[in-house]
Length: 199
Image 1 (cartoon, rainbow, N blue to C red):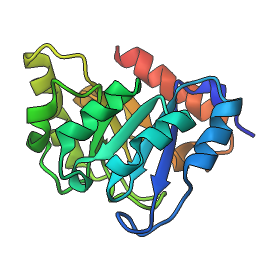
Image 2: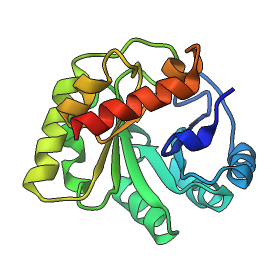
Image 3: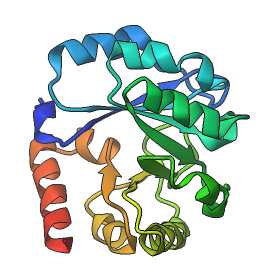
Image 4: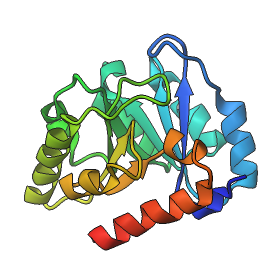
């Protein structure tokens, strides 16, 4: 059993079977989780045409709403819409997408989510070339003196958390590493300890 309140955020992956091969859940599940969860809901939309559903997911309880750059024709407009509705705006990119493609919207976002696996399924291995991408993004954020959270999702665990944080990540998304461990609570505490030691 895991106590979600031991985490800083709860990361919720919404998948539509089109942008990614898998299907997960929608607004009703977000709303149900929001009704029993006091920590922020970090909602990651892996769906086509996310701009059509921004308001519905925020109404359901998303505190942070992240859309994929690859899925947004008008990315800046979608970011602004999220923020106008009172949520923090995040943008995610897949492993093949250059991080530099986000540099024109860095001033507008609250969070950048770097996918370190191809999105859609849990349990994949971390793509270590992602570390260089994290470093380039963090350098750009620092040079511009911006307040943008760098989040990393995919293949994150106790074996590589320190390297990812050293590369410049601020937030780690861990699914399989926590839920497959013998003691999920202990794994969360150990990962948080790694983060605190890195600071």
